[in-house]
Image (cartoon, rainbow, N blue to C red):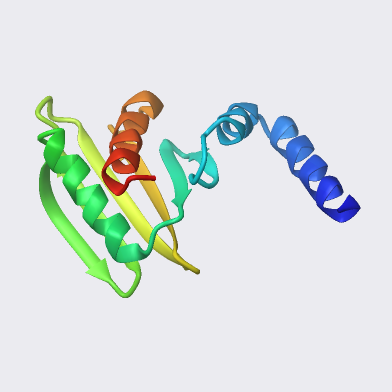
Length: 132
């Protein structure tokens, strides 16, 4: 138990020192069933307790519900990329990766530099669709 506390403390310090305090706070309050939140290079990345095929379907359905047009889609052996365009012309990129043990990482980037708020809306829709 002490090792776990030390690891958590070390991770907290690392996030605070690297300027990712927001990611740590979001992860702490993310809710039941949703794993790690990270915001890296304009992409909001979340690990979900979903098998890859369910995550793929949920991501595609979320884009469809937001009327985001898919221009290219690649789904190979536990890794996938969806390139899409919103109605306002902003590009949306969704990257999925099977992490094993029924965990899938989904990274969403909206626009050239990333828009965390808009990416979060798509993640929220994925959570709703998947029933997490």
